[in-house]
Structure formats: structure tokens, C-alpha cells
Length: 347
Image (cartoon, rainbow, N blue to C red; front, top):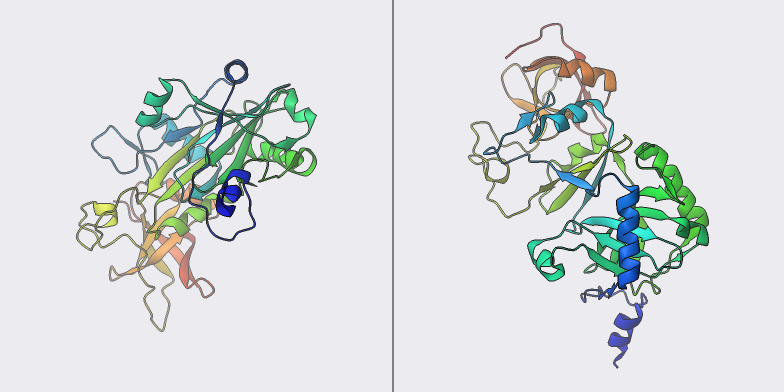
């Protein structure tokens, strides 16, 4: 066996060369697989981790909330306008699954969301693999984590915890509260060991505030976005950007969508001696709490993200375009919405 083959087999991390060989996982033994599936079925009310948002397909029945985001279900839109959300984005296509720790069994990775090819391979059953990890025996009292396992990029991301040491924390505690259990796991019960995992490097997700969505407006690469509600027992939502290559120009707009408006990408800020103090705010059709600002001549100033909760609620009370007070931020070279203008335009 060559040196490179030995590194692949042993999961060596010494070489800085990116290993393009996909990790070959070991299928879980039948009794361990059945025990893990039974534990999930008995302890979780919902085995669906993510619910996709349809933000572009207008041929289906859709719902548009007050912030201009389109959803396929009005109940989702209602939740989106009320709940606090965290954001996580990734450039990989790895789907999240369950990582189950049970007494006397190796950790079992289970994923129910399968592609058509995977469903044919498993004959409709979930994917189940056994992993090797260094964790304390307390975790094996019955714990379930949400992880994204990317065998191509040799990485695993621990994203959430649903059951911790036999306690169902997903149904009863918010995402923020569940992060405390994640911290306890990382600090006291887990030792990362990529070699033991066959070369898979494991990290813990760092969620960002909802305002970070604004930074995704100009992304050109494939990006999967997750919106995680800070609510107990609620699914996360997901959508993708640049899922396929599409021509983007002034006539076709974002991702090939026909539009009579100028391009929706954030234009350069207009350079003028005297900065305007108010503008017309037009809601973004994709991102919540994001508005495009236009001056009195109808020229675009920039896009602005509302980060103040009280102001966000006030803006959502209006159904049309809104006149707002603005201030130019020299640090970010963009305008900020600082309040409502005395003249409100209703479309």
C-alpha cells in the first residue's frame, strides 16, 4: 500500500493536500440500526429536520409575508413574522441527519432526507452508518444530535441537540437554551479525534443573527441557507441560492427571473456632497427586513437591513412602500434606516 493510500485508510491529517477521495462509511449493524430508529421514533414527534421554502417558484400556491418573503404555507409565514431566527449558510450539499448515542452501541448516523438514487439504494429505508467518536459514557444514556456529514469534504458539523442524556430538550427548550447543552457536550464529554473518525474533521456550528442574511444578497456560488427558529419543537427552514447556473443581466434580474425593475443586486452608493436624510423604502422580495432605498429622483441609494426589533415591527405595519429617515454609515459605506418619515407612501 502506497503512502497516500495509507493516509486515506488511516485518516491522516498531516498532508495539506485536499483529499478528493470520499470517505467510505461503515453500515450500521441491524440490531444497532433498529435500536437507534426505535429511539428516534419514541422520543421525537417529528423526524423532519428541515422544511424547504419556495422563494422563487411562482407556479405553486404561495404566501407572502409582511417583509416580502414568499412561502408555500401561510402557517410558515405567520411563524416567520413572529419568531426570532438564527442563520447558518454552507456551500456544501450535505443534508443534516441524526447522530444517535445509545448504551452499548457505537454512535449511529441516520438520515431520512434522501435523494432518488439513495432511496433506490436503501429501498426506502433511511441511511444508517456507524461512527467512532470519543465521548463520555453519560452521552450514551440516550442522546441525539443534528449533524451534517460531508463524506466528500471529510467534514461533520454538529448543529443542534434534540435529546441530551435521556432528556428531550428539543420539544421543551429554545434553540438558545439548547446551545447550553452543546457547550456542556463540547467542554466536558467530547474529545475531537479525526483519525478515529477515519479522517472526518468535526466542528460545531456557529449560528449568526438574522441580520447576516443581507450579506448573502451578492453571493454567486451555490449556497444553502438555514433559518433556525429560536422556538422549542419547531423545524428549521432552508432554501438555496444559485442552485443552477443562470444568466443574470439587467433584463432578467436575479437567477433569470423576469423583472421590469433594475437588477436586484446592491448597487453602488450614489456619491453626492449632501447625503439625503430620507428615502422611499421598497421591501426586498427574498430577504426579510431588507429594503432598497430610493431618493426623490427615483435613483437607488443602496439596500438597508433593519436590525432594530421595534422599527422592524413598525415597518411591517405598512402594506406598501414606506418613507423612512436614513443615515449614511461611513464604516460600511451604506445607508441605515433609523426611523419612519412623517410622510408615509401607501401603494
